[in-house]
Amino acid sequence: MKKKVMVGMSGGIDSSVTAYMLQKDGFEVEGCYLKLHDRTDGYHEKNLAYIEDVAKFLNIKYHVLDLTKKFEQEVYDYFINSYLEGTTPNPCVKCNRQIKFGAMLDFAKEHKASYLATGHYVKTDGKFFYQADDDTKDQSYFLSQVDKEALPFMMFPLSTYKKEDIIKFGAELDVAYKRITEKNESQEICFVETVYTDVVKRHANIDIPGKVLDEQGNVVGEHKGYMHYTIGKRRGFTVHGAHEPHFVTKLNPKDNTIIVGKKQALEVNQVKAENLNMFIDEEEFDCTVKLRYRSTSVPCKVIIKDDKATINLKEPAFGVAAGQLAVFYEEDKVIGSAWIKATS
Ligand SMILES: Nc1ncnc2c1ncn2[C@@H]1O[C@H](COP(=O)(O)OP(=O)(O)OP(=O)(O)O)[C@@H](O)[C@H]1O
Image 1 (cartoon, rainbow, N blue to C red):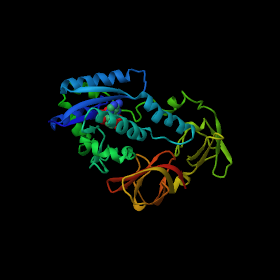
Image 2: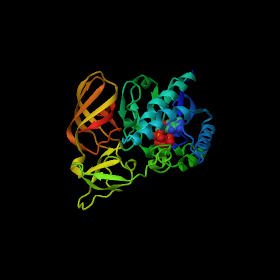
Image 3: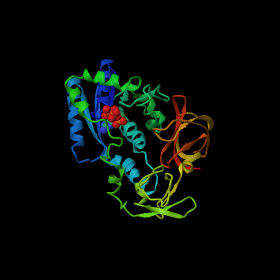
Image 4: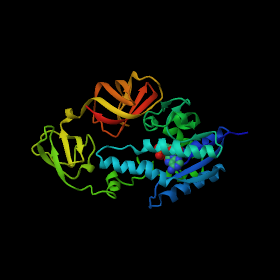
C-alpha cells in the first residue's frame, strides 16, 4: 500500500512542485491549505483557485483547515505586542512551531498520513535540520524552533534543488503552471500586505513624536514614534548637527524615546537568549550563530544555565535586535536556537 503524505499547499509553485514530486515518487498525496488570517483582498480565494487547479491536474484530494483563531492567539497577537514592547518579532518562526509543524502536523496524523511535507528549503534526517543546498533560499533559520518530536514526520523534497530546477518541474504541471507562476513570490510575512506599521496601526497610535537621545542621554533630535523603528535603522529621525550617519541602538517604549549612535555603537559582543529549543544535550559548546535571517554566521561559545543561553561572540556582530532568534549551527547542521533578550 502507498504511504500517505500530507502536503502543506499554499497555492504557490514550491508547494505545488512538492506535491507533484512526491506523487511521482509513489506516495499517496493529499493537500492541506491553512487559512491563517482574514485578509479581505481576495487572498484566500486566489490561493484556493490555484490549489484547485493543481489538485485537479494531480487528481488529489485537498483539505482547507481554518486556523485563524489559533494563528491570532499564537502569532498575530505576539507580533503586535512585540512592537508595543519595542522588540522586533519573527512571526514565521512562531508559525512554523505552533501552526505548520504543530496544528497542521496533528491534522496530518489524524488523517493517517505518515509524513507532512512542505516546500520549505531545508533538510532533515529526522533528528536535525540542515541548511538547504541553495544558500540563497535556505530556511533553516525559520524552522529552528520546531519541536524535535516533529522531525521524524517531516519531508522537504525541494531541499536539494535550486529555484531554477523547481521552475522547470513546475512547467510539467501543465495547465496549473501558468497560474502558480502568476502568483507572486510570497511576501515576507503572509499577513502583512504592505509594511508592518500598517498592521500595528490598527491596534495602536504609532504616530506619537518623541525625543532622540544620544548614548549619554542628551536630547539630540526628534522621531515619529518609537514603533516606526527597529535596531540598526538609520532614517526617519533627526539628529541635529550630525555629519555622520546615526543608527538606532535602543527603543524605550516607556518614555517613547529612541537612542541613536554611530555605527560602532551597534557592535555587540555578548547576547543573552531564552526559550531554548535544543537538538543536542550539551550545555557548553563552540559553534556559529546567526543572529538575523540574512546575516552571516559568527563563531561563538554558548553557555546554557537554567534554560538561558549566554552567547559570547568571537567576532563582533552589528545591529542585533531583541526579539529575533539566535540560531546555533555546527557547519550546516542546526543544533538549537533561542530568543534574543539582551545584547552588550
Ligand atoms: N497557507 C498555507 N497552507 C498550507 N501550507 C502552507 C501555507 N503557507 C505556506 N505553506 C507551506 O510552507 C511552505 C513554505 O512557505 P513559504 O511561504 O515560506 O514559501 P513559498 O516559497 O512562498 O512557497 P510556495 O511557493 O509554495 O507558496 C510552502 O511551500 C507550503 O508548503
